[in-house]
Amino acid sequence: MIVTPITAGEVAKKVINKENFFILDVRNEDAFTDWKIEGESIQYMNIPYFDLIDGVEEILDQIPTDKEVIVVCAKEGSSIFVAEMIAEEGRDVSYLQGGMKAWSEHLEPVKVGDLKDGGAIYQFVRIGKGCLSYMIVSNGEAVIVDATRMTDVFIDFAKQLDVKITNVLDTHLHADHISGGRKIAEAVNGTYWLPPKDATEVTFDYEPLEDGRVITVGTSKIDIQALYSPGHTIGSTSFIVDNAYLLSGDILFIDSIGRPDLAGLAEDWVGDLRETLYSRYRGLAEDLLVLPAHFMIIEELNEDGSVSEKLGKLFANNHGLNIEDEQEFRQMVTGNLPPQPNAYQEIRQMNMGKIAPDEETQREMEIGPNRCAVR
Amino acid sequence: MNAAKVLDAKGLACPMPVVRARKTMKEMETGEILEIQTTDKGSRADLTAWAKSGGHEMIDQKEDAGVFTFWIKKG
Image 1 (cartoon, each protein chain N blue to C red):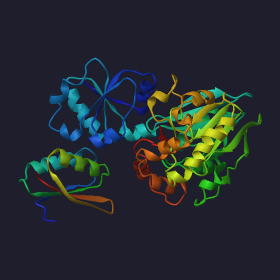
Image 2 (cartoon, rainbow over the protein chains, first blue to last red; image 1 turned 180 degrees about the vertical axis):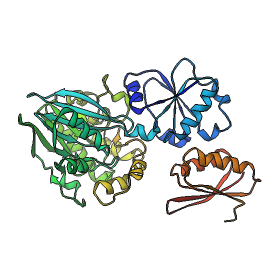
Image 3 (tube, rainbow over the protein chains, first blue to last red; image 1 turned 90 degrees about the vertical axis):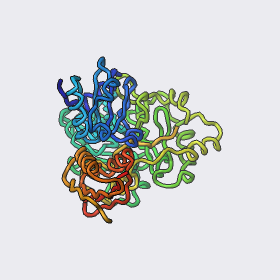
Image 4 (cartoon, helix red, strand yellow; image 1 turned 120 degrees about the vertical axis):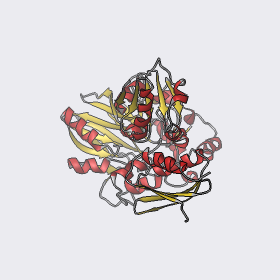
């Protein structure tokens, strides 16, 4: 029987289509518990490869024959090693090409909507890590928001659409992933924007994103309006695009809200977070489509793989927006915080331009889920 | 550290450092220490988990100029 490589993109399509398949994850138990390929119809088995060195006979009866079997490891070496043993036992089996590293880096572009004067807004779903980036396109120009480290994907996508990237924005200084914003801006000779309150320690030039600042895309003047919305970080800024979309950064997600502790003390910023969610956002139109910078759980994905919801729906359904008692809210966002993202201090340093590790180290820094939210 | 055997697994990618460590360990006596040198970053977590799962003891480890060295006592 044969061993077939399967790409992260092919696995992403299966997850979005809610396909039934079987994952044999051969990383060690800690790594699997911490972070894995999530999907609504996936059946899992986790056995470290080093427990299978003598053969796979003992687990063969636990591997289904009626669904696709994909072996997964960190980089792919061990998954090939195990998959070959399974194939030798007469089974068809695939392995994830590039392993969880490739899974972490895969971006799936999805169109989320049109703009009034022509043009469109695209979401780049980093399905393995839960990061969401955006490209707003109008009349030959593009603006990118919260770009990830895989800058080629954005630059190539703009080329395919035949648009010129003019401005690159980050809603805040990220702590869970390395921003590709500055690198893209340099590559296309565009402008890189950051909220000044998040940028006090950065080592490079940037354009300050201040409250009420308007950035225009294309000749049809699609406005991107900056809205100061602190809480996840002190500088966190949201954008209202074309009076129809609210890019909420790491402040408001679909089924959760931003955590206030990754760049300082939770207690310091919890008040800002509440003010933003319960006062500033309340003043916005309820039919704005919220486009966050992350998702936490795979159930937050829509049918087409995108992540979005009307602001009014979130006011009704998102638990984090419905805690009347301020003390209770304070307790929720400071009392029971999830573990911090992997290497988050180093990632912040890198996003400030203070360190410049090689690509392999950058990959290692980004291992794991994003963990930017509290529920 | 008084290692009974030294395994050079530098330059090897996963799963080979653990596969070699396991093979070498089989030829050793309980209580003896195996020194392993690797350059694969993933080997740190994997050797630790493997040692635990096999009942061995990770005595010490260090990193120097991109080379990881582990001392594992056979259990």
